[in-house]
Length: 397
Ligand SMILES: *Cc1c(COP(=O)(O)O)cnc(C)c1O
Image (cartoon, rainbow, N blue to C red):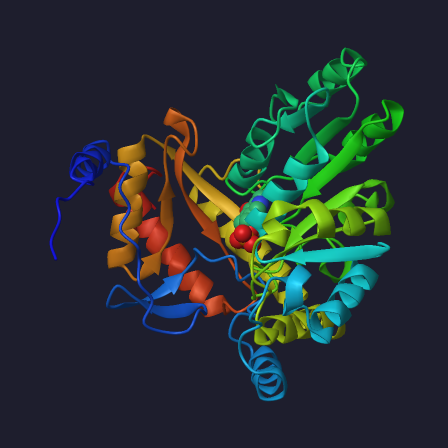
């Protein structure tokens, strides 16, 4: 039976996105996720994944997942509160808490679910949430789901943060929330200073370390560990979807935090448990980051080499301190051109333009992984040099 199309209006909406240059078609992989991929029908070197340690297709993770399927089957068939929690979920959370050096950890199906559910259930009218202006969209979503007051401080500006804290005594609970590593610039939050302010002003500190997990600190324990303030983060949020090559978000902290979220976080209660294969792969990833230090070493070796290469070519790489290195070119159209021309040369980097970043700060964002070889990176640098000069972003070599 054919009815009227009640969604006719979407044609116009999509057209309007296209006109504003805000429409993105999905790039499609025809290979595993790794340094060299087949994407949109072309063999390219990708510098666009969060697969920092190269775990996404690692044999140890594959094997763990397959064994879990044999032992536990594929699906879990229920939300965790009803009947979906298997022993493998509980064991993994214990392992994760030990790794993060916290009392407990709770896994959500994704990082976005962890942020939304946690912020939503812990804060309400009479509370205030104080947030860095460049925090991730999933934090912003979480804040929007509460009736708490909200204050935004300029990026990494601890003087402004201090001022807001000193002027916000009247609230019931105060939360300071920040990304550990910022995903568009690859810079880090000054967690040593932020943690000290939270101690001084009795504010709850939440760090979203989606891009710091598995990348920063000893054994990839994260940005708080890098700044030596692990013990001062009250709500330690991270993801298993990026460096660990799997899928999932988590909250680590005191046992009561886990107990409360288990019973109150809507994004935990109303969604089906992770398949055992995912949990087994996560378990193996946390093991691997500790017993095979070479991945983290390669990641940082590659980061140094590639970042220096871009700087030597004359590109503006901003204030990056991590494997995320932006190549800032200014106009949106120039970033799009740079990305398109690099793709023709066999290099895949996504343009990041307004409204994701300021209008005059359009860029392509590069992310190296432990899996890239020196040859991969040198090939990419050569292409950057060639295309950058052709588009007059850098002077002729
Ligand atoms: C990617 C990301 C998330 C979401 O994590 P998923 O597991 O992919 O849902 C949350 N916060 C930040 C800062 C991120 O970069």
